[in-house]
Amino acid sequence: MHRIIILKVGGKRLHLLKVTGSLVVVGAALGVLSAIASMFRLLKQLELAQLNPQLAAQAFGLTPSAITSDIALGLFMAPSAWLMFWIALFVIGAMVYRSGNVLLPIEEEVEKEGA
Image (cartoon, rainbow, N blue to C red; front, top):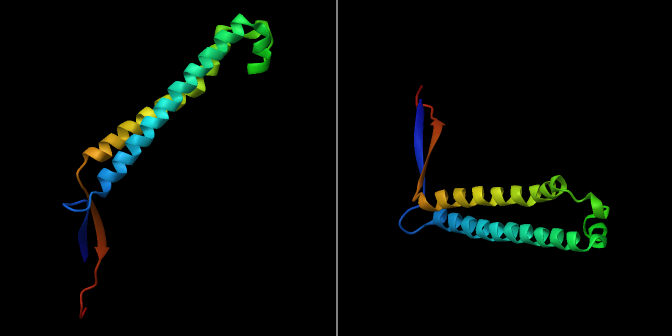
């Protein structure tokens, strides 16, 4: 015989999901800000490297004439990927925060007495 137990996470006094969701949202918001700052820092380095070609060798390890739009786009890939990751984590955290409670069905096998 099978019996299903419903485990409820969350309630009137215990708001564990809201706390977890809010911490994920705050952490993801800080991650988004960090990724945006990294993109602006990289953009500033590219502008300075174009104004002073000797800085290109120091900042990126490239020859002064080697910075093309393809390389600049490639340099922006990592911060852009981190930005998308943190935005997705922000959305997941907001969904966890908005869900008031979670019901988890747990199946258990029970033997009848006397059988």
